[in-house]
Image (cartoon, rainbow, N blue to C red; front, side, top):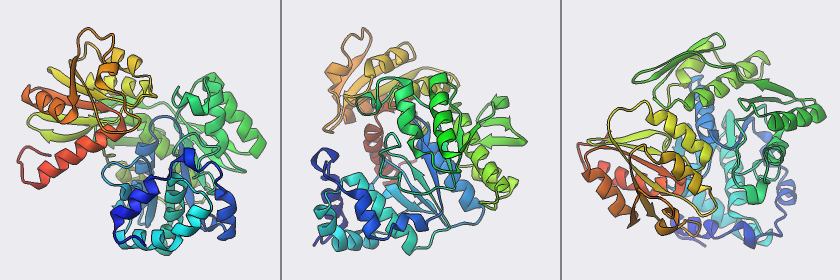
Length: 414
């Protein structure tokens, strides 16, 4: 028996996929009566923008007066923030009790961390009687533990070259994995345009008699201290200056409009617009104002492209602090960041993290500061706008530091 939440979390996070290859996850869910099928769900897959799109959908539903569960990964502050109801973390006592109750069963069925987290979310959302639950895919789609739900509608944001060792080495192969979430008679929304990806989506939709809906291009885009644009018959305002959020917000808007038209979810136009007035932590998030510090979990090449678009909206000199995982295309990511400001390369404690020295190989104008705390201190001392980016795991650590300083009463925090 675990006596506290951290012990339970430590045990769950030790359950690596590589050590649980014999998992009989689906059979185990069947033995429980497939609790996930009792939930009304929306499903979000894709390479980039999954978390933001999930958050927009959660916020819209909550604005409409519903009790909304959301399941996202990785976590940003604590493992518990992966499972939330109305944007509040899972209750600690519920989490501890459910782990203690089912631990032996989960071990006997060789379940991985992500499978266990997903099952806990099913139990929690059912016990707390949520009206809807929004599930973000962890990786891929076809084999993802979340792909046991039967969603009312789905979003596949985009397809980029990421996790190639697992999902495939071409856009087409990766798209087939992501399209694995498409089920019978499902409305699937996407803003992807690549021919190979759309072909994969269309084939899956034909097999399942599903409907592929393309997100319309935003019109009349204006970026000042926020973003305004038109999409369909909606005039949208977003509390961010990150242009990449236009696509994510448009995807959420498009899906909710379809759910309304299909009589699956009751929601008004005003509630959709008000629900889009939200921000997703760690995605171009301003956490300090003197100097300005922005956190952005741009963890792959496409994410860096979006970050660079956002950086173009900020005047003045910038200092960029970067760290990444070994399995990312970090050389290409750093090439895009070069010339956009003073570049500081660092590293953080994680079994998958790349060393600062390796990250900086071949870069002529980059400073290497191995200890990430010192790297952040150096950036802050410049007095310039600070952008901290790369791995979401890295962003989580940095955000925890700033949150701690904020709690201690510093006047410089947002």
